[in-house]
Length: 401
Ligand SMILES: [Zn+2]
Image (tube, rainbow, N blue to C red):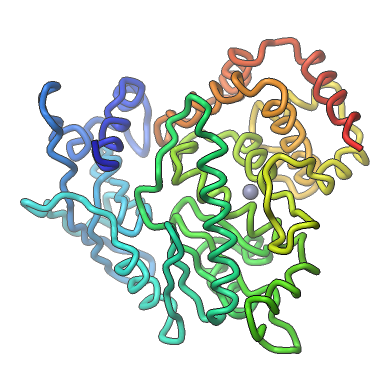
């Protein structure tokens, strides 16, 4: 079976059908013609997904995109997944025209096509380069792109290998993985501000579930100018390991979504997503590439936790909703605690963690759990003795030197 058909199979599972009958988006979701309309009889090969050409209005202009319809609401609104992996949420009033391209099945862009598309968008001084499953579109120069490309290729294959032993819907990425690498912080800022928001633009990088892209900038650019060689990038990076952690963190989000461990626009608890990214982000001071191994203690997060006061129901508040992550006053401790819980689960209760992760990974889009449902779902896998869970987690952390 090809990757494309696997995707179709995943879309047609029962929980998704149930969700489609129950969940509201704008108005009740009733039809998913494009997803279900072409399901072949059980004993034959599916015919693949049709490609549609959709014309719609955005804030800026009218656009035409080719892709596949992922969600179709009763009111006529759709979510279109473009050939670059970008999701377009198109409200009924903004939809101008839809056309099914006869005889054409949906296919993601090739690396070359995706690179050309990104270069066209980002500007003529950008170039695109392929590194394994990634496309880096950059104006930061070949040395910096090479350094990042090699780091991310190693990270992506390590990420896939790490989860192979677990019973998870792990898959190779269906789309080439786009990374925007800007020469300066200012260029990155402007891009992120237009694509996301001011807080995101202030960061050192981010992964967008909307565009499926990771964006970052050349953190080694300074008054000495661009690095002269990959070795020079390496020397400069060795003094910036906190920032390397951010790059690895954001790329990990991208690999988790594209590897089938999270579903975009689904109910992915932040503690789970962020905990996983922090489990992988740990910089390695002894490795000259800044990152080499998975699962070492994250001393940065551990120290934040040690210097915080945790109320007895801390873990419940972490799991039941995402509020602590979204409030700037509580985010740092929430992140640290999410790392600690993930570290404990992967080290001590990996099978239960993987089972929970699998359940979350297979959730449908646009169906969000209430706090009570989040807690119930968690307890189904990890039990309801929260005090004991907290104790065991803290006792593991105490043993870290
Ligand atoms: Zn994150």
